Every structure is written in structure tokens, then in C-alpha cells.
Image (tube, rainbow, N blue to C red):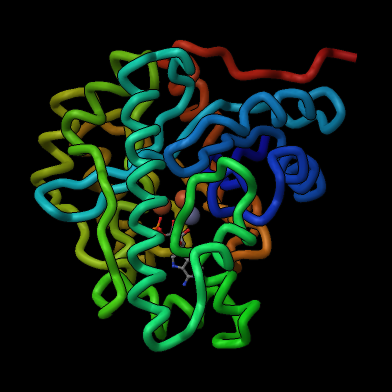
Length: 283
Ligand code: AMP
Ligand code: ZN
Ligand code: FE
Ligand code: FE
């Protein structure tokens, strides 16, 4: 069984629709994926409709924008109740703040690279969670950079002059909110050092005490040493270990199934989550 528990669609900053993500997952030989758009669950309905056609089982999820004392943390929430008002409100606040923040970033960038927020919206699906990748796409279309990676390297970096923060949940509160909504909270790419500062092991230990379920260890942003360190930490703290691609369609090099999660681990996640995995009908 091949399982990839972290993917993005055009409901956030991936380039494939949820439908296309499901079909790409089938083409990649995956049996199970989680759709985990940034601060959004609007892609679930479309993805569920492709389960039968693709034979790919779907784990409902989201990637929540959080921080621990000013350090960015991405928290995957798997199988939470989609109607939980608290999580919904948090995600909505993040989406609204992201949109405003993108407008301010574009104002700053436009001083050096003329562009408008309209150019950015042209590259985002209606209602999508707006992220820096959409600004990158606008810059590519305007001929300023060859691709998203170059836009991040030259203009969009979090320590660069154009960067603006957006609303994020405190990760401690978020872990508790995810659990209250019946979700399974897993820290995404906890040691992705290229993205900026990462949370200390002490913070992960603290989160483990209040309900954190696991760490995403096998991720392309982690080298061998980071993976070994996180695996040992997870063992120490009794946390699950997952692996995933963090697929963004054509927006990133990450390929579906390039890292995967052990079926035993998925079984533990399914025990803890309020929602069931959506499986194709048996033939
Ligand atoms: P934001 O959510 O607006 O802070 O933008 C961060 C998102 O941009 C991350 O979730 C990544 O998916 C994406 N990203 C970060 N670095 C790169 C890169 N070098 N190339 C393409 N996408 C990236
Ligand atoms: Zn993303
Ligand atoms: Fe992330
Ligand atoms: Fe992600």
C-alpha cells in the first residue's frame, strides 16, 4: 500500500484541481492520499467524487498556518470534523489575512517590479487560499523570473525586504483545536531549515504533552541527519512518523509518492480521527 499524506490543490497553492490531484495520484501508483490545502478544506468535495473513478482512497485534511513564539509551524490536521466552528473560523481568518498580506506584499514588490494584485488573482482559483506562490506565478507571467523557485529565491523569501506576515494560529492552541474537532495533528516538515527558523525539540515535546500525534519525518526538505534526529525524537515522545510529498502540481519539484507513510501508521491515524477514510467501492 502506497500512502502520501500531504498534497496541495488549486484550492490553495497547488496547480492541479482536486480532481486532477486524485487522477495524478492514481497515475503515480498511490493507494491513499490526504488532500491538505493551506487553511482550507474546500477541495474535499471534488476530491471525494474521484475516489471511485481513480481507486485512490482519500484522507480529508488541511495544513494549518501556525507559529510557536514567532517561528512558523505548519500543522497538518487529518480527519477532523469539517463543521467544527472553531477550526473553520481559524482557517477563514488565515485566508482573509493572507489575501490582505498578499496585497501589501504586491504594493511593496511593485515599486521594483511593476504589477498589480489583479495580476496575482489571475493566477489563483476563485476562493483559493492566496499564498506567495500566486505572487510568484504573476511574476513569471510578467517575465521577471523563470519560475516559482526563482521568485522565492530573489523576491519572496521570508527574510527579504518585501515579506509581510499574515495571521497564524498559535500552534499550541491549534493542536488542541484540531483534537477538539476530532482531527489528528501532525507537524509538517518540522526541520525544513531552508524555509527559516524551525521549532526546538522542547516545543515539540510540549506539544506532544497536549495532543500532538505525529511528525512528518520523510519530506524532501529534510536531509538524512534531520530525518534521523526526528525519528529518534518521535520514538522518545511516542509520536507517529509520517512521510509525504507535499505535492504542489507543477508549482514545485515535489512528485506524488516521493515519500510515503507506513500502512501501520495510517491505521493508527484512522483510529484517532473522527472522519473515516473514503475508500473506493469494492468491485
Ligand atoms: P505562504 O504560504 O504564502 O507563506 O508561501 C509559502 C508556500 O510557498 C509554501 O507552502 C510552499 O508551498 C511554497 N514555496 C516555498 N518555497 C518555494 C519555492 N522555492 N518554490 C515553490 N514554492 C515554494
Ligand atoms: Zn504551499
Ligand atoms: Fe508546509
Ligand atoms: Fe504543504
